[in-house]
Image (cartoon, rainbow, N blue to C red; front, side, top):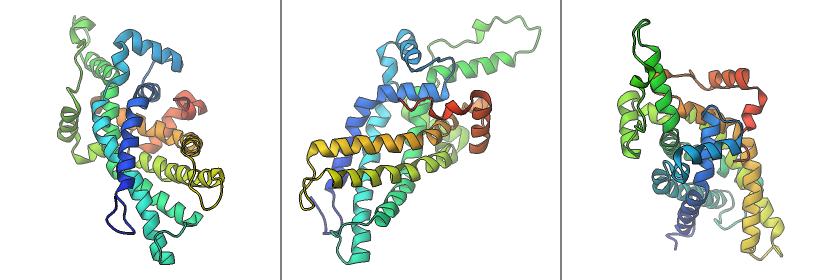
Length: 290
């Protein structure tokens, strides 16, 4: 399906299908990643998995999945559709033919533009997803803040300020409206600066290796790569991209999970400095396996 020689809709459809598949398969591990990056009291990945399962059952791994399932499909569709069509526009502008193969410079420009575009769509999606995934930790933080503000000498047991099993947000729509009421539109883009630091180099280091691996794995220059070769190229490129993007992703997750009533980080630099001082260098890659 296509509307012109330089603009194709099928790239958006492929991105939509890929996005839906990635959410269903990857959300449990994404929940573990988010808890490790922004949560407390987890010794390692296995301990985090067992803790979530014991306290929240298997459903705990799928907290906040409805919103990503509805939104990340659109997000992935926009990202991959935008990248593919940007390549064609660049080729048409530079070479007079949208089907002309892109150079490494062309791919780099298309990847960086895609990274910038992705932040506008993805920052609110990530924020809501992380707030819903972190409900247990956020309720605890707010309750401890409330307990800490009880006047000294007041005989109120801690359990009286606890709110067991009462989430902060009833769902994604309530989460969005709560953030807008408390922080305004800019609240939905908390962590967007760190997301730019993650996505601009991250997409560049994904699409460039992906294109290189696909070309290397083709039987010859005129044929298309085999589906298995495409999967392999995507996996290798994803590994390269994620390793380099993880430090910025840790900062983004911590800023987005930061509770409004007890704000811990003043910004990107403060989050980086505080994280390194309290947890050391290993904090940047503590969740790379997720």
